[in-house]
Length: 327
Ligand code: HEM
Ligand SMILES: *[C@@H]1O[C@H](CO)[C@@H](O)[C@H](O)[C@H]1NC(C)=O
Ligand SMILES: *[C@@H]1O[C@H](CO)[C@@H](O)[C@H](O)[C@H]1NC(C)=O
Image 1 (tube, rainbow, N blue to C red):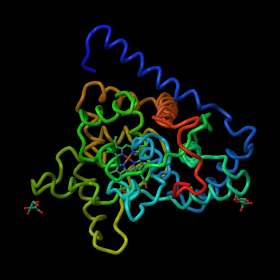
Image 2 (image 1 turned 90 degrees about the vertical axis):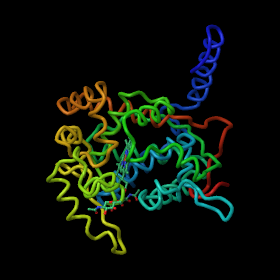
Image 3 (image 1 turned 45 degrees about the vertical axis):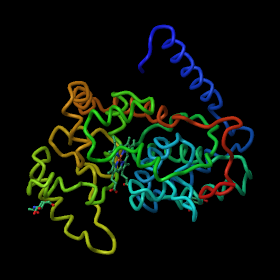
């Protein structure tokens, strides 16, 4: 922030206050009285979805990240485009790679039948993410505050401006996370989300075959992995675009193997591998690679923090009746 003395104090004081005031609307067991079974229903449904399809937790975790980074965790990613507005959902960073919207819609339908007009879509996505972390990483079901209201605005342009691209270097990533109140350590901790799930070959931006038009693979990508990706990605023109797993060691288990991979040049994106190029982020990567339990604890704290970015509470926003459109 560019400011002088007292002015600066005032400005930072005020912004801290406003953040504090917004967060005040969130609390643990928020639906304890209004919809006592809400969290258990979400847990049960997520368990069922996941046992039917192991890809579910990764999808939901990424959806939550993309919701929170764009206008805060307000369910804006869940809204459909309208004839006059292209929504976040249809922005290139989300469409077609973010999947699982129908699962959140299904949970909402069940909760609307149980307790109409009570549980926000933003909270459903946040709780469903907690379950996803629990189910894919054998994490404890950590406590999540509820009370988020649903936003009424969803714009493609906001998604493009706020979601980091896979080409991002560490400076850009640190900046984009700082814009959301997340630290350099949070950046490294949360990048561990890439220890589950898949990527479209297109998101590799040619790192495995023709990096920055050099005609060869990115030298910071492991040669054998590059060859493997090249052979797996040949089917790009088929109706269903080819995807590759993010973590070769344990593709469906949320764990610290991602960091071990980075140290072997096995991160899929520039935005992963770049974490080794800065002294501080590199230190964190090494620490996370050797201390799985410490990373787990940091991951939970960082997920909770991410889940409270710029939330709407109290009189702000609404409780949507259907997650894909405003009331
Ligand atoms: C640091 C900046 C980040 C960048 C540039 C980034 C970028 C990407 C990209 C390009 C994909 C592949 C999309 C596709 O082509 O299908 C992806 C997938 C994924 N990302 Fe990130 N990501 C970042 C941070 C995060 C964070 C903070 C989380 C959660 C904690 C996360 C969780 C995931 C998950 C779980 C997947 C797999 C999704 C699936 O299997 O459907 N990412 N990310
Ligand atoms: C989850 O699946 C079980 C077993 O099929 C079923 O009894 C239960 O009702 C399902 N839960 C929900 C919330 O749909
Ligand atoms: C790499 O990309 C550049 C620019 O698109 C292209 O001119 C070149 O032929 C490509 N090289 C290979 C080996 O595909």
